[in-house]
Length: 402
Image (cartoon, one colour):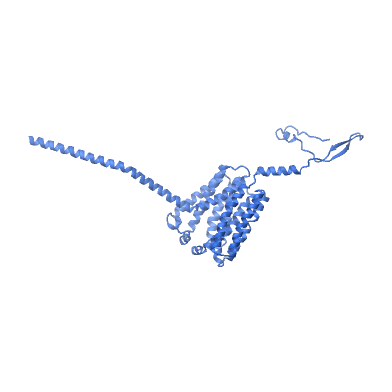
């Protein structure tokens, strides 16, 4: 009996001990799970951050972010010049955003079409597509989405003319300029047309039309791109030849024709300052500043023409990089608004209007008395226009001067 009780007690103690040990084990497991959950969440957040950083870098390189920002700067400058007076900041923001998206789409499609060429060239072999960091369908999806969204944004927030210019430039860059780079050296001039359209887009977004004044900045961009890319093509012609691109410098071993084309187009920039002043876009100060700036880049081009080395080509390339932002800044600083133009026209009209009229003698009805009256251009009735505009039902009074 005592033995049985001892066995029961022993069995009870063993059960209690086993249950307490299992409970302790479960508690330890739960505690370890809860204690490890912050590290798991931190690991997941780090993975998300690294993934976002990876695709952000890929999208930035596919979009050629620095080049696209330059395109946005030219478009924004065109918008400010086309505004005339006060600048609509919200519409300017929509214009810049839409331009950025369309430019990103065009740059991405350019890399999709040139993936094999970029893989060969040392300068472009580490881009996302040749390096395999992103797939071609992913890049095409990115280009299609941002291109359509940018065009739709311009169409809804600005006008159809600006959206049409953006869409046409996207097609021209991706489906005309890009294939021509592997066919004929004329691609440089087609690319210059592509670069000249964004400021025209900005002007159209602000004013709703295209006028003669709107061609100043596009003309500057067109002629500026020729010496800029001629210098680049001369410095990197071995790389371009390896990539299979038909650049103008590859058919010119001495570099003389390349330098001549660069110098000629630099000289073409000289009259633009005079035209901007003559057409009423800027003040006379810009005429002087633009001339000095253009002579500087022309001097760099002439230096490259005399001594056709990579060092002189690099100097001309750096001069071209300096030219464009200074030229656009001068346009913005010295631009003439509609109010300024209106005041100047009125001031000129006031100075040209006769302040006095000659007197003559007139006979009265009886012919006996001669009186002196004022003859000349009849003055505008001071109240006649006010009677017509606010009160069309009242007759305009007449003022007869005797």
